[in-house]
Length: 108
Length: 117
Image (cartoon, one colour):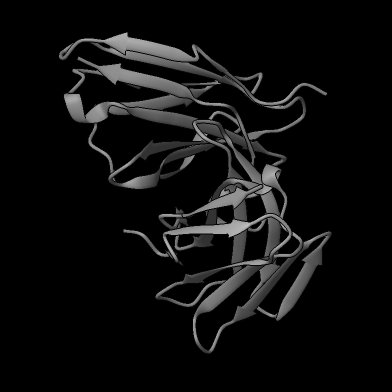
């Protein structure tokens, strides 16, 4: 079963704009992670946020977590062409469960 | 420090054959987990190993199996291949936490792209 569901499935923006991706999940979680995947490659860890945290920053990345709404968002500010990738959230449900991902395209 | 190494990078097999994929974790990492990625089902957890013991298993048939050696290297085996087994198989390592609990950063290899004809 897929715990995390990303929205939108695909997003295309201009370089320099901000990109926001959302993840919703169904059951209570302890931790939520975000990963990036370039086409056909392995995943790269971006951020881990725990259930008692509301917001976390890492460089141009900002992640929020709303446990009451069972949702998280990933904001990438001042996007660059190199940010073009698929982004996945992952939650703990007895096993690590990934969402279907958001395909982000940054147009020059 | 070398990253997670998966071999081979590409593999083509025919239905009914079996296949073994290999994963060498980052030096010092004792936990290895495996994932299957397909366009239709996305990323799905296969199994997780720590100190040669399987700690958790996903919802896959018994044709999928794995093991971990004393040096933390891991292999997964798929017997009696089916067309639907065509996928990117990813391996990830971590220091020792439970990958299942999402409480530790996972380091992924580049994957093995398996095509079953």
